[in-house]
Length: 209
Image 1: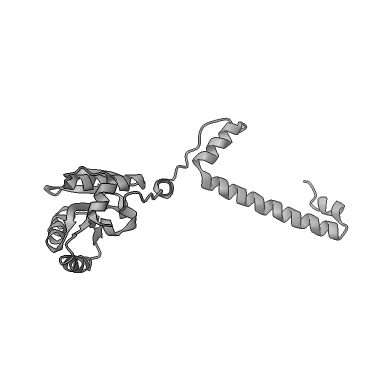
Image 2 (image 1 turned 120 degrees about the vertical axis):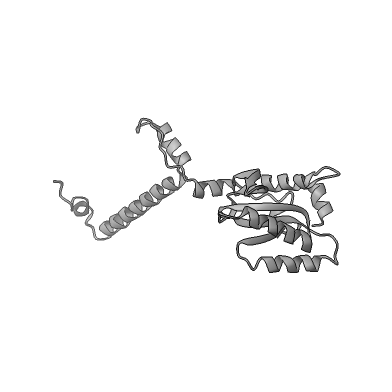
């Protein structure tokens, strides 16, 4: 997607500034369930975005990424990344000038030889495009922040069980699976007993202590 098409689809102002793209990207991350902080203090400077995306990321946003702006952003990120282990991410539009695009792509490939650094041309990757809805927030929250606290209600109340199921869906899946296995085993044993005409002896094969 061309930057101009991206800007129009995202609803940026006519004379948009870098901050508009910064806010857009931050909100995209939030919509996927990640925490985001804008203009976060970082080693004497201010990082555009700090997030728990990718296990921790510091993002420097530039309007257009060419050779020079990528190097500039990487220099800033190296400063912000001192004394921490966050991923260092450069984000922005691939420069529209076709003659400058090869050097931009080559520079991105070069700096990414450092596994800590990532360059994202947001108008070339589907997950960042306007209108591309990625509903991952609940999945991220479920696996990253499991909620296992149980409501303090009467065990005999159906509302208690309903709240348990709602707060802990995986627990209910496990219980349902175990019950299914038990029922299946009982059916197999009953079928065997019926086939061998030993239903009565099967039912009372285990004496009660």
